[in-house]
Length: 262
Image (cartoon, rainbow, N blue to C red):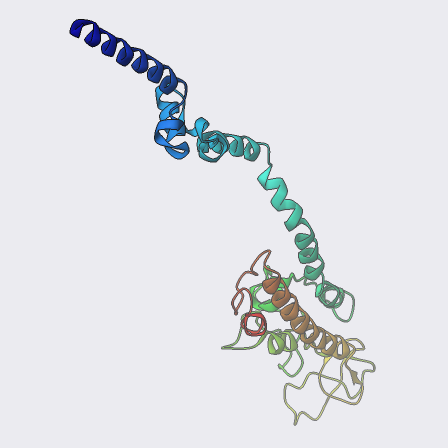
């Protein structure tokens, strides 16, 4: 009887253990709760925890990174920047033409090369700012300078001479005689006789005329206008930000621009 009772108890225990094992292998929730069961079931069934908790999209960083890099490979960065810089470059070109008209007017006069004003110089924006740096094959002007005793004058800059003064000096050509009498070069203001041939150089006498004087004044005034426009042009380009002008004496953008918009 005792043996039978023991065998019966063991049988019930094994049966319950088997039933419990079947339940646990199917789902741990009745025994550990719904929060822990998800992880327990995944571990028991060899399932990825990210999949068990529906977090695959959230933790799959490599896949998202790879997809992002593939998209970046398709983007033409240079072209994209060009889309932005294109209009700015166009504006930069337009601004670069602000002073062109003034420079063109100056060159029309400085390269006219006609009697009695044989000027034959062509300037760029860089050389008109520093006209003494213009590449001229001779050391002195090919014409006589007014009030210089019948002599030409050096193209070299004198001390700290400004561009305006320099242009006024080298284009200050002597006059020409419109008649033979009362017309000469002033070698000596006390010279009793002042006679020359018609069209000779002169800087003294009633019949000495100065046809190049207005051209010289036009060059100087043209330079003043150019200098103002060129300065504005460079400042606008500096503020635009496409390219900082060379040898610019301010920052890019300008201090004025920074003060107004910073």
